[in-house]
Image (cartoon, helix red, strand yellow):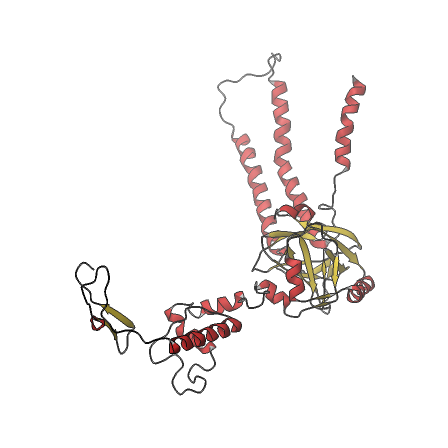
Length: 403
């Protein structure tokens, strides 16, 4: 039986051998501070948990049915000393946890630039942080290095002891950018930009992934993170420039399509305006950017109040091509839609075509109207159209009773 019990422990040992302590022993200073915060919080809570568990076993043993020597006090109902211990200890722990959480929330704010490389070593103000623009695609990661003009897919690299500034967004659904060895996770959301500041302190190969379920290919949405010395990082950038392909808007639109288990890809050049177009969700040709939409909304939106704000977008509104009159006429006009230059050109051609058809069509007959619901021989004169001098066009239709 003893041997059988030992054999039953073998699966437990196998499960424990798969544990990865990267969260508690990371290679980045920010992640290390977060790990320390987790350990301190756990130890503070154990100050209450361990005594409670021990006392539960002690009381169960002391006041068991077979122990006739246990003291029995059925009329006991209060102890000031015990009440002080019961309430004071949790209160002190809550105060410590609150102070620790408040300090950690501000010092480890992902939007806050880091002020140290490691304990005892402050950030050198002369060192420029490495900026990486991160795009969560379906189901892969795109990394753009604007300072070097290159980009990669499912491969990330950074030099050791150099601050890293991540700008993060998504192409479609919400994701979560997470490198356990570097720093905590931060969400990636379409049309929004989140930030994360971190630093890697030890060279090595680490793993990053999405920590937020985002569809079929979520399980394989992983990438390699290389921590290198400065010379190794410079060589890696040179290799990307030599062995990559250009990343323009057309290539990005192909890359944006859902795909799974995508191998690492490299791009030697990047369209300078691609990141802003991704962030503003207007990579597609002719699509209005979110920034333009927000600017229109800031000026009043596409209601009557925005007329005078949107009209200045037309450069020749007061002098039409070859005309002296205002292009919008003397009456008030309203913006009904916004279109691209190609759509406007097509609409203008369609108006010209319809005008030509109307010019060549037969004149309208002025013969009396006839039909169901009309009196016999209602003349066209009974249908009058009145236009107010300063108001909209109105139509007054006079017909027979019960028409």
